[in-house]
Image (cartoon, rainbow, N blue to C red; front, top):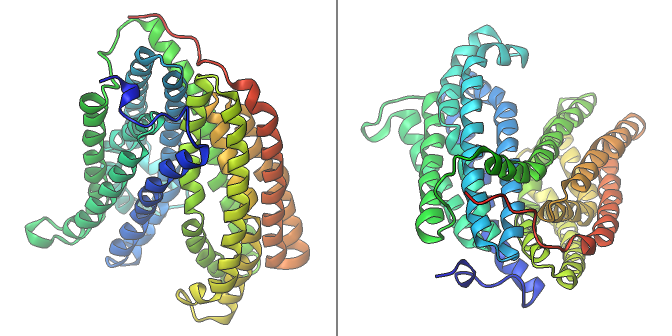
Length: 458
């Protein structure tokens, strides 16, 4: 069966209908993925403060490595979607195969460098000497299983690129389910399993992701026929890698800048006391769940735009910008109203301190008014990546964080306290959302052309 017959064509029919169909399965998949850290943190916390603190030290490192995997996935999705939209199925197979090989090599480098630098890296991050053995208990299995964190990201991105987001969502949910089952068995040694504590938490994650690795490869190879026999000619291989990395490397930078800026903001909030930090922490636990529809939408916009760009569907690309703008405005302001109404009750589930709750409620009242802008920034960045033009996405993200947000956050925090910082967040989101809309609307029609040059056959 031809690839183009397996899934509904994204090149015709309702733009809004396709985006809705693609995004809905990803809502559940992303929600399941979000549960990973929550589940791990809950079970590790039962071991005591020291193991919990040790795992907390690993979060920034794991986040950076995940950003690398996400970037490679974005590059793969963009390249594959454009080739798929152009009807070049041989190139689709070549790109998926070569991108998977690149992901494998990157994962092996991460494993080798990571294992060799555990002690010096975590000393640099401020871990005390007595904490290092516990950190190693977690990071050694995690590094050894890095291939299961990186390669499935590329494989699932390739599946989304051809319009199969439903399978991607199901695999993500399966991974979260297996992690939930394995965590207590391996951490506490239940049902005859050895008690591995922190090692058990890491192994649960590695095993669950390993399952996703084999499931994704099965569907890529046996069901979708998206992989070819690896070629050994260097020039075509490097051409494929350049195509993937042209989007992948800027996407990595875009993903890394956000947590880095988050650390600066926490430091600013900390100047207002521990209660302010606790209140911000509550709000930041609630916010990702509220924004999950935007995360899901941005995960499928790239493949949709990429396919239509590859097919030269300029009118559909312009319609896509309009659909995204209407959705982000409508959904953004709806979320703002909901959080204004229920935010105090949600925050109250986490704390009964008036000072802590005041900060959390202030955030959930002020910042959601700008979710329309933030949602469009996410969608526009994904669209630019789908077009194979990552530079605008990277510039918008860096400008939002470094050029607008952090200066305004410092001024707001200095002159108006925590509320001023939250207002700065909202202003930044709205300003950059407007810029992203203007930039995407201006450029999207000019990018609708068949995909990048095809590498030589091999």
